Length: 469
Ligand code: ADP
Ligand code: MG
Image 1 (cartoon, rainbow, N blue to C red):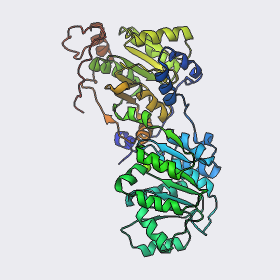
Image 2 (cartoon, protein in one colour; image 1 turned 60 degrees about the vertical axis):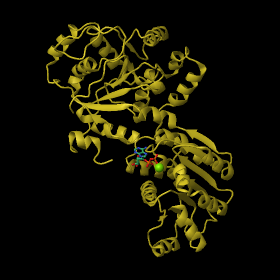
Image 3 (cartoon, rainbow, N blue to C red; image 1 turned 90 degrees about the vertical axis):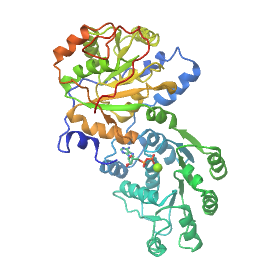
Image 4 (cartoon, rainbow, N blue to C red; image 1 turned 45 degrees about the vertical axis):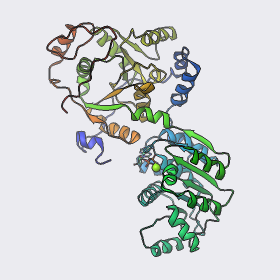
């Protein structure tokens, strides 16, 4: 992905400083479900599936100390959704079919349980086989396995075509615990009897959809037929078309499907930008951004209840149709806010992460992360509030100078770089910005100079302007 975002933005030397904040809003989680009560059972189920899982830590997944140290060494601070979902079940020995978009950390999701199973170097015969569609991926997946095997004596050998087979044979002869290979080359080694599959405990089909696309199906089946029948099989795929289902049915034991693709998809289709901004200028930036974007409906996320409340008090003095929602409000108050938000009577809702999670309103056009989220998963949850039901959505994240590493983590989590945005004239003082807004009609208009005619209340959203970056 090139240089980490915080290097691009702030230079590598910036030291991370902790935000001076009050306690995050975490107690209100249980009450979110009531916000969902008015929706149809189907929508409710989907929302809960996507949003109900609280952010987990690697330490919660039943991993050994050596793995936790390796993860720390790899600077993986928290599991991705598929890692949190898949690792405990894989550790329990189940056959799993994991579906998630590219870049969601599927490699570690299967590599970690494999490593937990082979704590000692066996040398006799390989214990795990990972089949991948391409040479590049074989090298990449081996790199990830080696990284996560930090602190263990585990040999991982990649076997793939286009390289002299001799050196691979030599490596296999010296003893390999984990094999990563393309199906063709794996078969080749099997025929030469340089690869013994009889001791395999785990077989992984990584990027299974791509392997089938390339035409590896017969090779894969030949390999699977030679593997011990009491093995564990993990299949990872971005999509699960019928041929994959058939493969799973035939060669896996009661596979459980873990589907994380919906959540990722919704974030993938959303335009995502970031602004660099000093803490004390975030409020001015928010005003300018709202004026420029004129959102149909926006949620502004803050990190804590106190920050949510204080932003609400400030903003509601200057703009109409602003409300806030957080865990210190009574359930009655919160239901009322949600009702008004759904009815379009609130245009800008300021929320904490926990409460914001349950919100499923299709007309939300903008997500503004006034504070970066505490956990990367919260970013996905926040941004997933917009672009619902195939609608257009855009998300802006305010990044303070010391929050560069957090931006990088978000980008790693979604495997995509956020685009940098700037507001022209943002150099204007806070006073001018505020004065412009108070002279606006009910809804802030696009241009701060010539006041536009008042747009219809909650009417069509104006075209967004992508100002010069
Ligand atoms: P996928 O197989 O789903 O396409 P990868 O396993 O290749 O995704 O992971 C994408 C990138 O994310 C890799 O660079 C990997 O090192 C990194 N990564 C994976 N898990 C985490 C995590 N928990 N925290 C931070 N980075 C991670
Ligand atoms: Mg992958």
